[in-house]
Amino acid sequence: MQRGTNLGRLGGYNQAVILDAIRRAHGGIARVELVELTGLSPQTISNVVRRLVDEGLVREDRKAVSGPGKPRTLLALEVSSRFAIGIHLDPALMTLVLLNLDGKVAASARHEMPAVAEPGHTVRAMADRVQELIGAAGIARGKILGIGVAAPGPIDVPHGIVVGPPMLQGWERVSLRDPLQELTGLSVLLDKDVTAAAVAELWASERPGPENFAFIYLGTGLGAGVVLQGEVLRGASNNIGEIGHFPTAAEVPECACGRPNCVGMALAFRTLIRQGIDAGLFPPDQDLTDLALTTPAVMQLCAMARDGQPQAVEIFDRAARHLGTAVAHVANLLDVDRVIFGGPLWEGLADFALPALRREVQEQFVARAIHEVEVTGSALGHEVGAIGGACLVLDHVLSPKASGLLLERPT
Ligand SMILES: [Zn+2]
Image 1 (cartoon, rainbow, N blue to C red):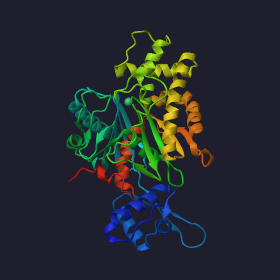
Image 2 (image 1 turned 90 degrees about the horizontal axis):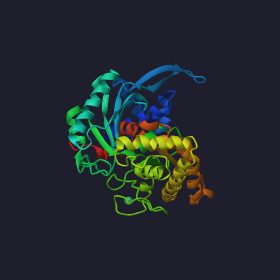
Image 3 (image 1 turned 90 degrees about the vertical axis):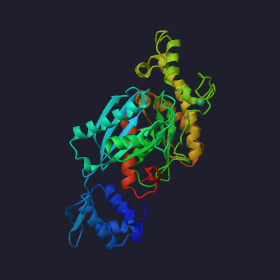
Image 4 (image 1 turned 30 degrees about the vertical axis):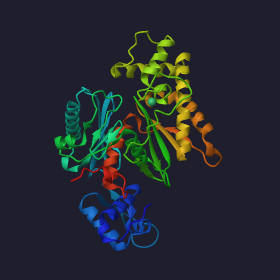
């Protein structure tokens, strides 16, 4: 628990500290407990809580009797008083979610990415899909706090721009934030998909103590989001986590960076399909480049491995060894106690790849005599990126942290 301050000019911060404490106390919390938890004065707690109740963010709940003395009023989050929208732009799919104040999905939608070569069209489609989502959920527009967009990197956060992500042809420098803001009339934050996913995991976590984990995103690309001591790390330019170019032992097809042994290429859809062709699992003319065709082909290969098809199993065992070594480097560099896998490719791999990955990472984790590194799959499923987008907004508006402040559009 971060402790607040009674300085008047930091009233906004105190409000965030108190709201955060109420949000985390799922069974409700009394004012006196807030005083103990936050270190704020009873007067400050009383003033801020009155404001939160007036604004409809918090409600006063049943009278709780605990031991002798008069019953105490419990405060609880009004979870449906505000919502945040998250959009995950994947080269193949656009996923949208509407989260309530408690970080739970109230509505969601999934669309194929429209006309990727025409970014302007994509931004208009995003605005239309947002409108549909709000309409379908039947929520007053005034209750929407904002939109968080999780996009593949690299991104230019100060300008709200996506800068030439490898799989989005035609997206050299695409302005997302400002046009989407203008089209929807809602505030828009932009962050890398892997960082958004890490924010989602942080919000979903019920663990005590500060979190230390790496989120490994497996989709059409490979990346890592990082949380250390409970804080989401972003790096100098918000482009943290480009682990796809870590070298592997094996030669794989040449990467866009020009090198012959990048781990990202060991897991690239076209590499996996090529290996499937070589093993006779796909016809020789199986498409290697069109995402609309390669995505289902890789999922088919995953299904074969799940069913125990020996060559398919071998393909993913090899991929898991390369990935496990790269992820072990990440775990060793950061000294995390948890590694979480997620993303669209992970959805296909989760059932059978986890034990091999866990073994690789744990065996290569140098500090294993001091503490364990837990290796798991995300519980948030294929929507983790979009949930992360919405969590960026919740984090920005609600959390007593500085993270996200730099994402705000200059006004
Ligand atoms: Zn590379």
